[in-house]
Length: 111
Length: 112
Image 1 (cartoon, chains in turn red, cyan):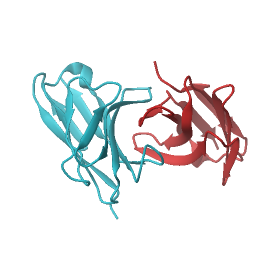
Image 2 (cartoon, helix red, strand yellow):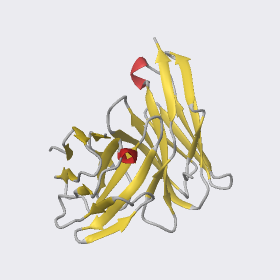
Image 3 (cartoon, chains in turn purple, yellow):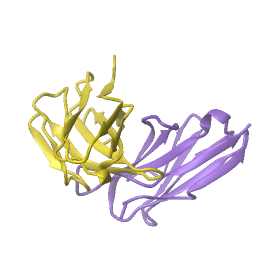
């Protein structure tokens, strides 16, 4: 099974609203990353949070990490139609050199 | 700066045929990986490389071979294509370690 699991699987919101998605993982990690994928395209790296960090911001993105619960959340504030995409969390396990992706959250932002 | 270039973008193979998916990056990245993405799912790691001459297996390596003779190139070979290998294949690279990947635009492979 995959290391990271996103919740919800799909999310539909109005433009201007906030979008929150969660990621849970199973084993100790070096870092957790979030990527965006527009339909039919390659993934784009959004943000990386290290295991010793609890919160990180980048523009309209806010990521939190709770290593005790093995979970992370991605918040997109003031969403725009252009934020419509699938969002994936990915974990770099502490004892390895591999990046493992979750199943993704499909976000639809309605204008 | 081209980033990560994958060729071809689309390919149809017959069962049993072999082919090589090409991946090249011009960013002098040490770390490169191949993933497959099936409909509605996340990415699964096939093989990865931490530098020229060094490769290792990911989660789903069976039926695929890789080599890394140069820093720039990381081809993925399908030995004998099967319908279960129908997927979109992504190559990704990073400067050091599996962080902040740059992805190629993908190869959509159909095996009939």
